[in-house]
Image 1 (cartoon, rainbow, N blue to C red):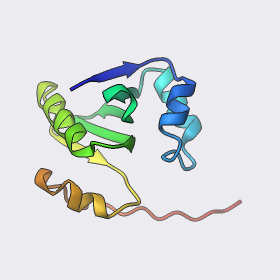
Image 2: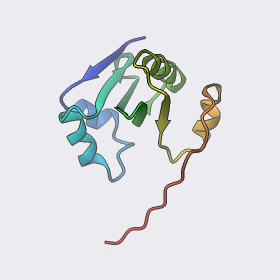
Image 3: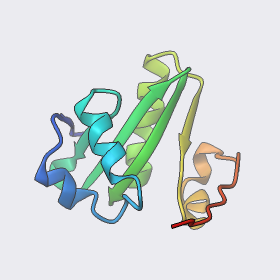
Length: 117
């Protein structure tokens, strides 16, 4: 499995994660550049992701590309190596729960958003 950390933020990450940012782009870039978040290139650019570790949890902040199940296998192994207790991801695609069913993800929360400006 070829997974490479990318630092600092780069145009490659802009392209590789372009469909994932929503309104969080500036925060994600700042987080990667401050080393609070980690950005990765997977399988020579077949996918890209940004993660963070906080309070015993690995959070996949954004993921774009193929081979998601293989990437989740890596995240589980990495979490185990680090002694973490959980993996969390956010998505607007409920079908991902079916795709990742072998990992037994459970719905933990729902997010509501209201635009005020």
